[in-house]
Image 1 (cartoon, rainbow, N blue to C red):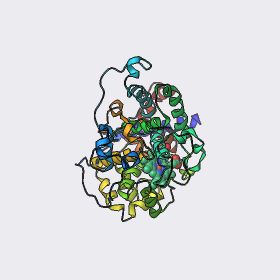
Image 2: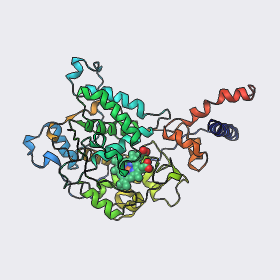
Image 3: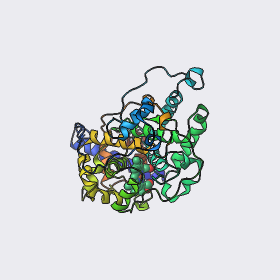
Image 4: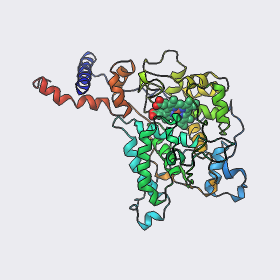
Length: 414
Ligand code: HEM
C-alpha cells in the first residue's frame, strides 16, 4: 500500500517537474467564476412561508428579540447570515465568567471543531461535510404530522444511526459524541451540538455562509419516526412532497441540496468511493448546480439521480438555474433554509439564544493551492488521491513531502 502511494507521488512529482519545465512560470490558480452579485428576488416556485413550533401560536408582542429575528428569517424577510464576531478574550472554560455567558462554552467548542473541519488545503474536511449531513439527518427526521422529532439530538442519543439512511455518519457521530461528553457539563445539549457543528462546518468550507446559530434546543431520547429522510433514487415528486411536509418549499429544497457542492459520495456507488458531486469537493461554491446540469462534467464528478431529477423539475429548475451563477444569492437562501431546517420540531423557539458571534469568520474567496493535481484526479487519474482530498489535505504538500526521499534516491541531483 505504502509502495503504491509512493509510486503515485513519484509520478505526480515527475509530472509536476515536466509541466513546470514546459510552461515556466505557470501558476496553479483556480479561476473563481462565481457570480457574487446582489441578492436576486425572483420568487418563482416560492410558496407562502410557514411558521413552525411555538411561533405558530405566539403573538409578535410576546416574542423575544431573538425569536422575532427568527420569525423574520422564516418568513423570508430577515437575513440569516451575520458577520458579527466576538473579539473579546474568552474566559477559561469552567470559570464563573464563562458560565455567565451562554455562548462562552460554544466558543471553546467552535475552536475544537475548526481543528477537525479545516484541512491544510484550505478546503473543509470529510468531518465538516459529514457534520452538515448529520445536522440535516437529525433535524430532517420530522414532518408537520410528527408528534415529536426534528432537531432534537435523537440521531446520536438513540439507535437511529444504525438506519440505512444514516450510513456514512459513523465517524462524525463518534467525534460529536466525544465533544458532547466534554461540553455537556457546560450546558450544551446534543441537539445544539449537532446544529452548531453544521453551521461551524459550513462557514469553515471556503465561500460558505456564516449562518445565524441558535442554542437552547431540548434533547429527546426517543428515536424519530422512520421514512422521513430522502433517498438518492427518489423522484422529484416524492422529494418535493417530502420536503413540503417539513415546511420547506421547492425553492428551499433546491437551496439546501446545494450542500452536495462539498461532498464526496461513499455508499451510493462503492466502486466510485470518494467521487465528488462537483469538481470542487470541500469548497462551498456553486459549481454543483452547473455541473449537475452539464451532460459531460469532469470524469470523476458523480451526480446523484435525485439531484438530476430535481434540477429538471419545472417547480425547481428556474431556481436551480439562478444558483448556477449566483453565489451570494445561494448563500443567502441556503442560510435562510438552514435556519428553518435546524429548528424543525423545536417547540421553544421563544427561549433560544443566539451564539453566531463565536463562529469563525467566513472565507470569501478561495484558490486551490494544488489545482494541478486536483485536475488530474478529476480527469480519472490517480484514484488513490481521493483519500487525501477527502481529508482536505493539500496535494502540493503531499508531493512536497516526498522531495527529501526523492533527493536521497536520486543522489541529490534535484
Ligand atoms: C434531495 C434530498 C437529498 C438526498 C437524496 C441526499 C442524499 C445524499 C447521499 C446519498 C449522500 C452520499 C452519502 C455517501 O454515500 O457517503 C449525501 C451526502 C451529503 N448530503 Fe445529501 N441528500 C439530500 C439532501 C441533503 C440536504 C438537504 C443536505 C444539507 C442540508 C445534504 C447534505 C449532504 C452532505 C454535506 C453530504 C456529504 C457527506 C459526506 O461527504 O460525508 N443533503 N446526500
